[in-house]
Amino acid sequence: MKKINFKKIGVLVLWFLGIAGLISSLAFVTASENKVKGKKVDIVIEKDDDNSFLDEDDILNFLKDRNDTFVNQPMKDINVYKIERALNTHPSIASSEVAVTVNGDVSISIKQRKPIVRIINSKGESFYIDNHATVMPLADHYTARVLIVNGFIPEKYSQFYNISVPQIEKDSAFKAITVIDDIYEVANYIKNDSLLNSLIIQMYINNDREIELYPAIGNQKIIFGNDDDIADKFEKLKIFYTQGLNSVDGWNKYSIINLKYKNQVVCIKKFSDEKKVKPIVAAPVVAEEKKKEDTEKKDKVTEDKAETKKPAATEEKK
Image (tube, rainbow, N blue to C red; front, side, top):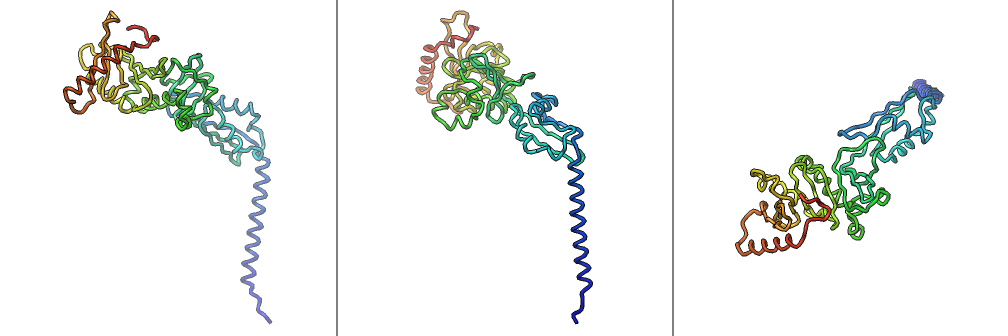
């Protein structure tokens, strides 16, 4: 007669009892969760800078308009992923996270979009470009303290709300007819440079579709051109400000500073009689002196360009 292994049977019984207990516990917890209703909503809005487009009421009203409510709603009916996707469609929200607890608490974490420049187009419509190079509309009750650009800008928000700057830059035909990408690239460079961010307070798009900059100190118009050689142009400007304008009344000596030309800064002095305006050529960024004949030739070309091209008609005479 075969000997019965009571020890093995005991282990199996314990396993079955444990599994049965776990299943019963899970069933009890599930039944309890089905009865739990939402009690409170905790909303945290991340603020990395001084700009704040949203508050708790904005989020609650947005969800209410979608019939997404939490208080007194069964927790089993709350679809976390669906709510997150809905929140991420809000024009001022970069990302969101929603979490619920078995006690009926709901937590919502919001990360706002960060505008870096505000565009005012030719029709007076305003919108932003954010730090992810996509356009965003103005907030209903808050205006961001960012660089402003206006002028000859026919582009509308409705044309670009679903198009990013990288997409524009990949399409040569699209890039040729818009200045949105130029505005973003220059504004983003200014934003990330503490000196330039304090110095430059406005951008302007002239009728040649070129960028002009206006500083916080001095009354100069800085002709920047397009978004080619951004770093080189700003480096020239910094050196010119520290060396070329480092003199008595140097900040008020020039009305126009032109950064478009390679390895030089072309300036126009202020005169009471516009007919007497003549260009002054400064080359603070050239590492070593050119040969005399090359220098004379370059100066002559620069003077010819400055004398034949008048300042933009939209600029008020200093």
